[in-house]
Image (spheres, chains in turn yellow, blue):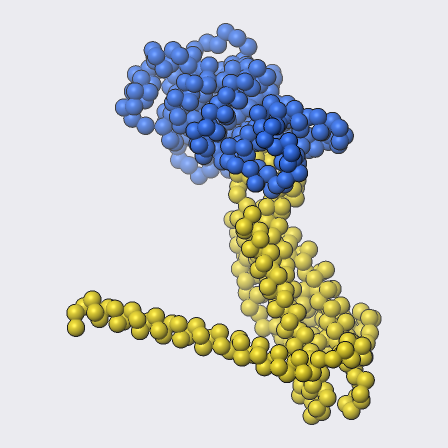
Length: 280
Length: 261
């Protein structure tokens, strides 16, 4: 066998193995989605959106409480996390740049991104739930916001840095003060990227269970009281899934399906926005 | 050794003993540059890469101040004051001394909003006044006919040459005294280049122009005065025709005849 023939064989083998690995890795994703769709669609019904939780065995039980609770928790986390994340990212890109402080913040933010989410839940339990004396939607939302901030901070920082420096200079050259340059020119230029970061950040925290376990806790009843325990899809799913009751398990599948579709939708939307922004 | 002509007419700017050192650089990028800039004329700055021509250009609107740590000394006189004074109001200065960059810098907004941007910064809100001045600026920049039907469209949909003329419209809309052009055609095709050059010549009726160019033919075509720079020195400043035909300095002659650079 000549050296060239050998190389061709090695090349084909490497190609075959890497393709196979990619197929195996992806097949798990489709397996998960497939099972979810089969079990989830079966468990779906209008009742889920109409009724709140009830003890096992009741006909009229649904997930309204958890759906609304989830939306409140994620919405509140977004209201807290997005402005903080964007402003911090703006500081890094436009003011801190390559300063020591900016680098330190970037490093800490990267560490926070990989922090175990249950640790963040425990932290919020210690600083908010304990002093308040009870679980609350606020605590859950803050825990989610803490997880969201580093993601949004980093994408904002990256996306703002992609805006060409000459565009900033051009605005300065027209006599624009710095804050106007950032708002009018830099933000506009990075709009699609920042929005994508926000959506991915929301998608990232929307599926979290651990930070909610001992912050917003859970409940089987519909509530909009931000100072009380609040049901969420994730914790409800966990509780229902480990219960021995068939109807609760069914609701658990429905919750899993709805949550996954929501997150999948956010991810796809985020990518579409980024693509549309690039195409321009 | 430098040969700097005396400009008899009124000057828009006077550079005196200007030194400039970039942050962290061991040697200065500009050394004791003294240079008059004639009013309502085009002054071209030529010289090989790294000679300091863009550095000098960016000193006129204090662009260097955007990046802390640069050091400069000397004097640039404009409207009777030294604009290098730390107390100089840079926002005001930059409305008086506009700049056009190498690559077109259309903002990510509509054509109309691009041109109106500088005026809005100055607090002009009146719709009819804005409309009128946007139209006039676009006409003066010879782009009105091409964009009049799509003023609300995204400026990034325009071609490179159109974007550059849009940037010129944006700069003249605030009625500056001086316009700085930093190699404005190096990213453009020959026809767009011709358009910009024609515009530069027309604009000197109203503003004083300094243009940095890598292209000696361009300097010869558009400018009244040309300054040749080399390694941070202004070697020669003269009437464009004289400088290209009968340069006074040996270095200038070597550069324009293509011996180096």
